[in-house]
Image (tube, rainbow, N blue to C red; front, side, top):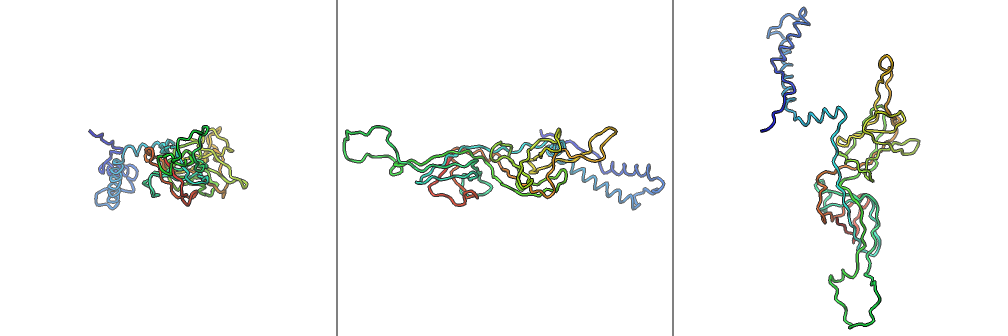
Length: 315
């Protein structure tokens, strides 16, 4: 049996109308004496009671989970972002020259770069060695049995071995150096272009926030809250699900005799007009659960605009 959704507000149109009329009788008894249905003021009151009743009806139809998420967000509790699957990719080089596979190379299960196919990106640069001919590891046999060529299974392809190199990849897409400008105001929030960001990874694709200071890019640190910090702490809070970066707010601190007259910033703020750049990975989720031997297509990307003949990949 399905659970019955609770009424967040059980007042009806009649309740709202009665409450409004009682308030008028108590507070405006001298100025407003005609409370009959024909009074224009009462007609407006009934219209607003009806509209409020409709709002209450819609409020009571909101799913409980959505209400819980909204209330928890007000308390600073956010949904855990999607995790990005990790895989080891094996690149094979069937050319006579080494091939460099740069970090950020994209691999997928199909030849189409669309939102349906899971895309994995390499986390570091590797060099795939060239193919090699087989080398005998023993002394040559001087007692030759004949002069006919020895049959080799696999044809000409068995005469050489491809160069092989492996690298770790994650199921995500990577954005490097998305730009913003600081307003210098406390509590500034930066809306990220793509969301959700993946969960923290502590590797090359983890969230990176940098602020330009005196001509140099300075990395700021992610925190979960702004408590216990100093005005020099270069920190921010990231809501990876909603895709926002928030800097420290300013609050009125408690002092002897009440609240301070001037608000104090809980941590450092980027200077007004200072450039801010973000590098982050987004995506992840269940689509990254890919079976073995399925990631076999290399996609054109900014780090590899042209596909290289003789280079293949699998997982």
